[in-house]
Image (cartoon, rainbow, N blue to C red; front, side, top):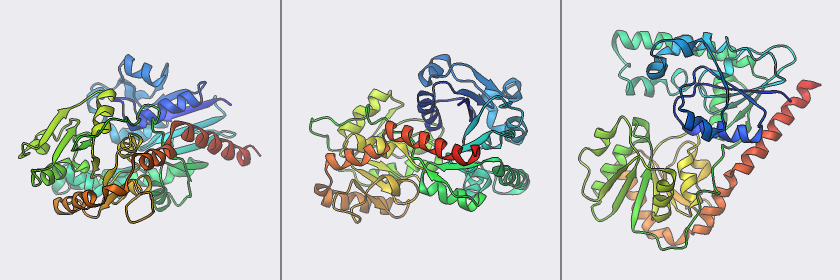
Length: 376
């Protein structure tokens, strides 16, 4: 089977790139196509990337720093990628990769990380966070996104078989494109994120890039209002000043840390705190793989990866219902009353449902099942 993998863009390592890394290990003969490729050689080596075929956007001046501003050109650019020499085209898409043009006799399968968020149901949130929700700029942004939505809907018909990374995403795919998806949860490195036998510290941990929808500022305010409880915040990003503003002495900021450093923090934590509405959310599963309970906002992918106190006899965490300080503080207080019900063994066993080997088996089965009727 000659396989082409089409990725949206390659700029910084992240969750989508982790998926790509495991796909290349699963299908080592695959070739990779992407709109742009500006990853450092060392980062590409970690992903197992060799040659990447790029679109004309690769040569646009300033594309490395301002690639998101090229959004209006991306539909055209992805259609310039020439994948004619392959039996199967697998698009790994959260933006435009699934719009790649295929040809008769080829199977186009899509692993959907998300429908194009800013064009569909999260448009208002993204425009507000970008300051583009009013005035002439707001009108222009909405006009562009209306156009992107129409293109996205029309070109979704080029996909023969769909897989989504969670039931949450499958529901959004169904509403956006009117199609059903197989569920293939993304891979979590449970061989790396493991528990230790040492006693844990009396400290809560959260880890994320500092961007608005992660709601780290809310987490910091909630713990500042609970001065007897310690919080460690791992990560950095454009919202650094906003997140750090007004933090109490019980809140520690580590900045960005290595994978080893993140694992060490997760292993020592009394619980991991997660306030985002994510498509899947790798971080809470990394924490559970280390035997650490999770206190999570009760929407999005966390509902599929964390077993709440109210659901079964072997919980791995609990949920708070609103992205507010009061709701999170109440959840922390409940956790401390009932944390005896959550064991490291239950957390670890739950995380193993998302191991790399499970993802690899799921993707092989998805492509094999998709090819059978297509070949026939």
